[in-house]
Image (cartoon, rainbow, N blue to C red; front, side):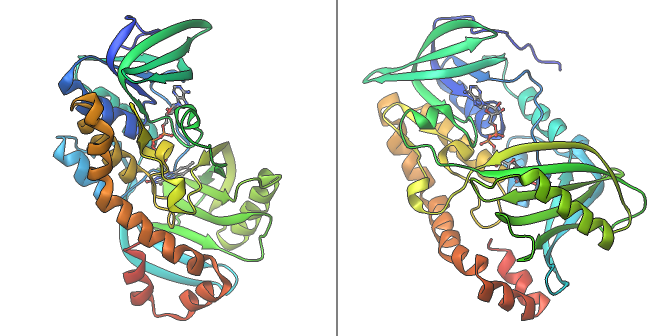
Length: 364
Ligand SMILES: Cc1cc2nc3c(=O)[nH]c(=O)nc-3n(C[C@H](O)[C@H](O)[C@H](O)COP(=O)(O)OP(=O)(O)OC[C@H]3O[C@@H](n4cnc5c(N)ncnc54)[C@H](O)[C@@H]3O)c2cc1C
């Protein structure tokens, strides 16, 4: 990594502190830097590893292009994949026109960190453990490899993902989806699709699974509703059933579990309170229907950073107002979510012609 990364905050006070160095936090830090000192903290060593399918929506590519960032070095084989709805019960596949760039997520996240201006202080291995807010700003308690620091800021941006500590300081923390993803060796070719698999026969809290080829491997992931017991066992069954359908899937070489925000109503979306703004999954910003979160993280990170660069007492109002179009999109997606998850909705998707499923998918 070319950029200098500190092992602990070097000062007692910053204008802005951003917690979480994912896509939301990096964009927020970049834009907040226009107004003064910024500390960007991450609990894990950087560059970090994030369990992810690495499917980059055109909206993400467009946001990054506006920042002069090109995806070239992050893209893997096959470079573009098409979304395909796969109803496993009826073995019906509906290829859609929606396509994604197929990236290596770790390289993508590193690219974002490297684009930060040198004025942003980046500290890794530093976990925010508590926040106290008063009318002029916040105190953040940071555990830096066992040493405790108390750091002051005028405005705090929580971009610390689906299990956000910063969110819990101002709102109830919602239980997230549980995800399990395997990296599977490929012993033959599989089609260049991002297959989303729905099946009522899997049960045990299973929401959906996905398969996507990437550089001689396939990522096979499953998403489970909150509180699902023994998701690893269910993932084993999914893999076994998949191998019967796709003999090119070889042994799994790595498995990881993670979390994703579970957004079921507009109450689950929390832009912030007082001098705290929440961006990305910490605020509940992701597509509730598809789970696509990177474009939401980038866009809300940018909005939060721009708002934080204004007078701190105006930041939250400015952020809320910038969020309005995105909130309207989430409201729409939440309205269609129950139908999508219902048996009737799945049966309809099975029977509708592929171009109609494709047209609907563009809005999810
Ligand atoms: C298995 C899986 C597959 C996915 N696939 C896709 C996909 O293909 N395409 C897509 O668009 N989206 C995908 N997503 C969603 C996407 O990864 C997220 O929506 C996106 O990364 C959210 O970005 P973020 O910046 O809000 O949070 P994150 O990327 O989660 O970053 C949060 C950061 O905060 C840090 N942190 C947490 N707590 C603290 C703390 N207390 N102190 C300091 N740092 C802290 C973490 O270490 C982490 O680095 C997937 C998610 C999962 C789990």
